[in-house]
Structures are given as structure tokens and as C-alpha cells.
Image 1 (tube, rainbow, N blue to C red):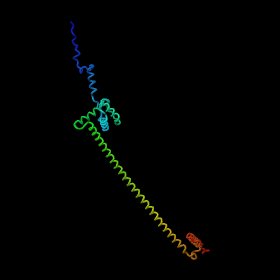
Image 2 (cartoon, rainbow, N blue to C red):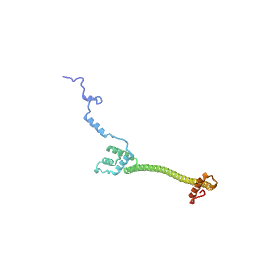
Image 3 (cartoon, rainbow, N blue to C red):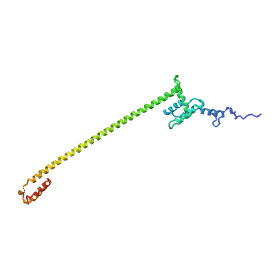
Image 4 (cartoon, one colour):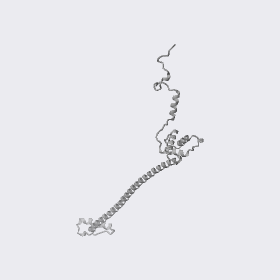
Length: 229
């Protein structure tokens, strides 16, 4: 009668954790695969724009099962209206919608539709407040710009007025100088015209006669002087 080997052990006593190289039984693999399918793969938090699309999908998608799966249609609606750069799976949309439903359960008299409307209204009010603040900031910027333009315009007008006054003053000074020059010229001419040619030395007679003749012609008197002839 033969005996089984001493070192041989039945396979039922083996532990999965103690046998790293052993393979999992098919039943265990299927259980792990089922668990993996149920795991929620959540990404980054939903943005305000994405929440608005989810709420809008809740209000617009019918719950009639004949037209197809509810969350599939919600996901299709989300993909059709989602903001640029958004990429959410159907499971993510379902979890987000479920979270909103759980938060709204405390309001017994409020329906799911009115809750979604309220969320949309709050988001809309926040958006309007942001736009109002931006408008106020723009008005303030434009007011400052208008004030700066007014200062520049006033400065330009002041410079223009100063230039006009400067030109006027310069013109007036020129007129005064011309009158002074004319007065000096008349005084010199008067001295020349009052000279008695008969009393001047002979070598100066022709000079004074010529000067007197030029003065007479410049003043409009064409008759020549013949005192020295």
C-alpha cells in the first residue's frame, strides 16, 4: 500500500495572498470586474456653466421611458449644450443630478422641477450681479477717461487763448516800434530840411541838397530843389 508524499499538500489550503504567482479563479475575476464597473470615476468639480446645463437638461428631458434611457438623454442633452472644453461621462451627469436631488429632499413641499428652477435663478442672479459690477467698473473707467479728455481740452483751449494773446501783444509791440522809428525818421528829416545850404561848407552842399531832394520825393513832393545850382 503506497502513501502520499509527505511534502504534498492539498490545493485547498493555499492562500491567494501567500501565492503571488498564482492566478485568480474565474469567479473571483468576475467579482472584481463587477466591483470595478460600479466604481465612480469622478473628475474635477462641476463649473457653474456645467451646473446650468445639468439643471436645464433636468427641466427639458422627459422621464417617459419609451423615448429612451433617462440619464442617456440627459447626457446627450449635456453634450449638445455643454460649455467649451467640458467632457463629462453619463455616470458623472447621473451622480451630479443625484447629488442635487439629495440636497433638495429637505424641502418636502418643493418639487424637483422647482428646485432646478431655483438653482438656475440663483446662477442667473449671480451672473447678472457680475455683469452689473462690470458695467459699473466700465462706467467708472469711461468717466475717468472723459475727465481726462476734458482736462486735455481745457488745457488746449488755454494754450490756444495764450497764443492769440501772444500774437496780439507781438503785433502791438511791432506797431509801437514802427511809430517810434517813424518819429525818429521825421525828426532826422526835419533836421536835414532845416539846414541853410548857403551857410554850410561848399564840400557839404551837394550832400545836403541830395538828402533834401530824397526827403521831398519820399514825402510826395516832386519839385526838385535848385538852391545849390
